[in-house]
Each structure stands twice: as C-alpha cells, then as structure tokens.
Amino acid sequence: MTKFNLIENKEIMKKIHSRVFKILDYFVEICEKNNFVYFLSYGLPLGIFRENKIIDWDIDIDVDMPIDEFDKLIIYLEKNPHPEYVFTYSGNTTNETFVWGFIGSNKTEIITEGNMQNNTKGKIGMDIFPIAKVKNIKESLAMQRFLLSSTAKWLDLEDFTNLEKWNVREKIMRMYENTDTNYYASFEPSINKYIFDKNTIFPLKKIELNGKYYNVVNNLPKYLELIYGSDYMVPKKYDKWIYSIKVDD
Image (cartoon, rainbow, N blue to C red; front, side):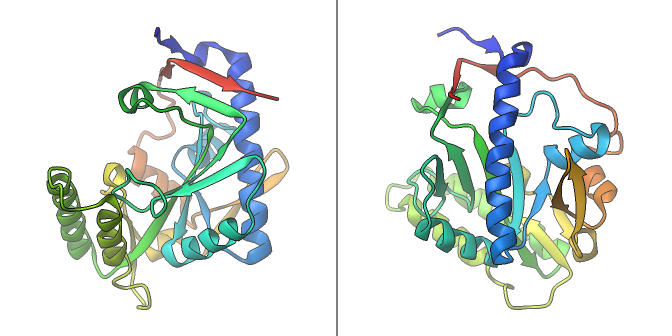
C-alpha cells in the first residue's frame, strides 16, 4: 500500500476538520451540561492562539481533564451512547498501558503507519488525556520514570494482563486525588515531561473560534512555551503521511 501526503489534499482536510469540530462540540455540550471540567490541549489552542484556526495538518483534537472528571465522563458516555461517535478508553481496550480516552466517528476510517504495524484501522476523532495531581515536580518525575520503565518491563512479561498494567498506572495517578496540591502532570508515555503548576491551568479561561467558545488553561502562553518551546509562534513545516482515509458525509 502506497503512502501519500494528506496535507496536499485540501478537500479531504476540510472534511476532516469539519468532522473533528462536530465531535468536539458534542463533547463540549456534554461537559457544559454536566459541569465536567476540561480544556483544549496541545495543537488546537496553539492554532487558535497563533493563527485563529486549527493547524492545517492537524487531523485530531486533544483535550485534558482532571482524572476525577474523566471518571464522570466515562460513566456518562457508557450510559448515553451516540449512534455515530464511538467512545473507547484504556479500561475497556486490550492494548493500552496508560490512561486515555478517545471519541471517534464511525463514518471515518484512516490507516497510518501505526495502523499498518498493528494491522488495524483507525477513526478520525479526539483524544482525551486525564491529568493527575502530584505533590511536587521531583516526585512526579520519579513516578513517571518508574511507570515508563515498568511499562517497558511489562511488555516482556506474560503474566501481566493489559488491564493490570492500566490499573497500576491509574492507581499511581490517583495518589493525591483528594489532596490540595500545586502541580498537575500527564502520565501518558509520549508526553510524560509535562508538569504544570496549578496556576498555569486554573482558573480556566475561554477562547473563541468561529463564534464558539472553548475552555483553555489560565496562562496559555506559558503552557504553549512549555510544550512547544519559546518559538511556538513560528509555524513549522509538517507532512502528514498516511495510507488511506475515508470521511463519509
């Protein structure tokens, strides 16, 4: 199967962006109706802040939620399934080693490099990353190093199920759930370096895009600089290579 550069197909990208914003608006409506706490994370707030739009090559949207809010979302979505939007999370899948959720459209299909390796087909949608309270930066980094090294060891052990991997990570994320702490951290392996002081995130603010308002962190410039570096206002050239994609109307 031959790869192609998705960014060069502007018509497909327009369809993808339309679809992911429909999913985001569905998610935000649920959060606002139920007072669930969330905020836009990573690429979308960068695109809005820098260019007042989603970044051209983005094919998904990310949000973060405190882990206790993520629990509430799981309960709601399992009780109220949507005919098009499929919700999966690390507790009901068999191949995850971190705490994570995803809302995807069953009217889409995408095959990327990772899909080819796993012999699977993906969906267009949005990722939901829980963040956890941590006591201090030093301890958080130590916890994350432990989790990452443990995850690597688990992959070679036959007597650990994937659910057990997820449970251990989840329990560590909940250590300070009911404690007043000054830091929040993500424990997803590829973004484990991001540790935020509470005042960078809360209280949340609103950001406007196309007449709609979404939650973002309290100090967005500081947040973006931590993730993308001091030159985050300079757009980077990027290619999005995939094998196939389908976006139905």
